[in-house]
Image 1 (cartoon, rainbow, N blue to C red):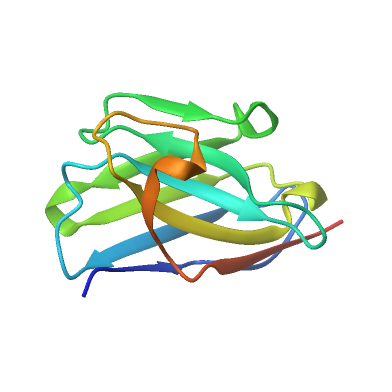
Image 2 (cartoon, one colour; image 1 turned 180 degrees about the vertical axis):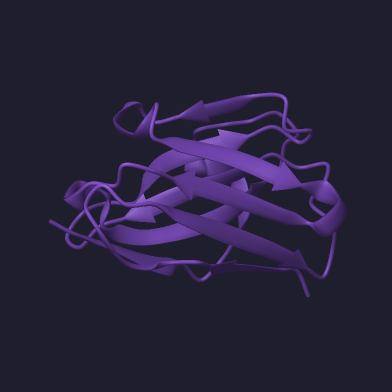
Length: 124
């Protein structure tokens, strides 16, 4: 069974850093674009970052540009979200997802596999 499992969340002070990992099992996602989304309490889930199947192309929501990076290790079926200069508004549950397409996409409707999420809490 295909599965995405996020890890690396936690409590961090504003200005700090975290690295989230997303480990895939059950099948390889090396031919799929991957993405990270987040959902804060009382808010809708929003796009955070995406990476193409081979890692050549990435895109980010404006609020995290310059602070977050996304990378992937296809040999180990893992995707990472590196978060720096964290702010209190980054507090959310972060979800990893696999797209049905090889090209990166910011649209959640194209993501067909989702992880269970990992909590990131940034204290000010």
